[in-house]
Image (cartoon, rainbow, N blue to C red):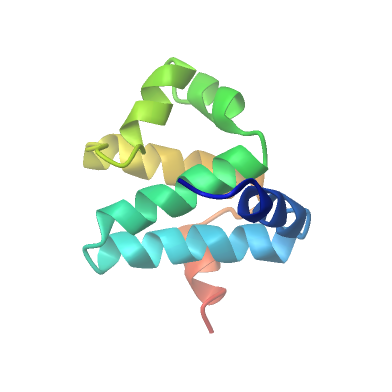
Length: 106
């Protein structure tokens, strides 16, 4: 279980748009490297810190609880749902394309 201090730190850091974009990129890289647990954890941190669970779940036409389960420690999202989640998170950050997200890595 994460400490309250860590959660506060992440929330503070997420005030910076560049940090939020870096979190999304890190989550994507984790998934691509096969580390689903870390990818889910990073997306949870992002959505918790930005208070985005309700908004993103609504845009994905799902219940907030379903989105939370999807990226829980034992979550097992379908590729379709995972890509939809990334699309909506990217849009929240003003990132229009996957190429734009990936360009943040350089």
